[in-house]
Image (cartoon, rainbow, N blue to C red; front, side, top):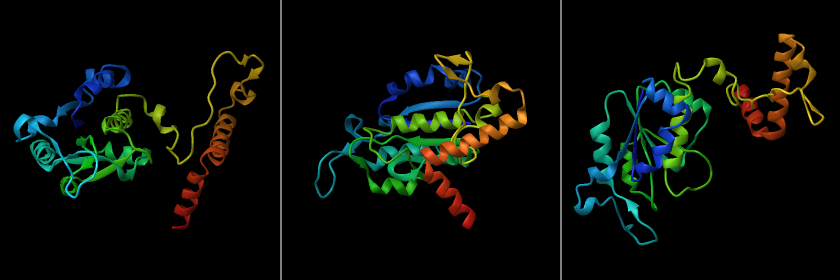
Length: 228
């Protein structure tokens, strides 16, 4: 898979690309990630990429030309163009699994007051990582990239992500490690029993219990899907 990230602040990605699982995936050539400063696509003097909004108002708006020229230069028949945007579809694990299937993703990081509305005509998907506003799209682009890269074959073991939170529309079950007793806080005895069937049942029950307590909306979504 190839992921091209269009940004005005390439240095924000330096640590992201040089640590942990992302670094290993890059070194093993399981994914290619290109960080592209789309100022270089600006046809204007001083590489201008933004201007004041028509109709007045605060802030600056990203212009069409630099962004669209970058998309047109990078896009191929197997590409999907993603706009990070508070108005987009709220991101989740199912979307990450869908995006993993593409050979080439182009992710555009917004900034300033927003995008010229016409940029949306050149985009395939708009994604929001939550109902809040950030100073730019770089952090959402990192979150999206990280969540997809970890799903690529060979990056981590399948078992590591198949039972993650949200993989079955439930939150993950609680996990423990040594010691079995820490300051009077004991590991549930079933996990020490060696009975794999009972352990599986315990974990599923804990997933359901935790989801009902912490994310009842997920349970409601499941019920709605069953009705449909």
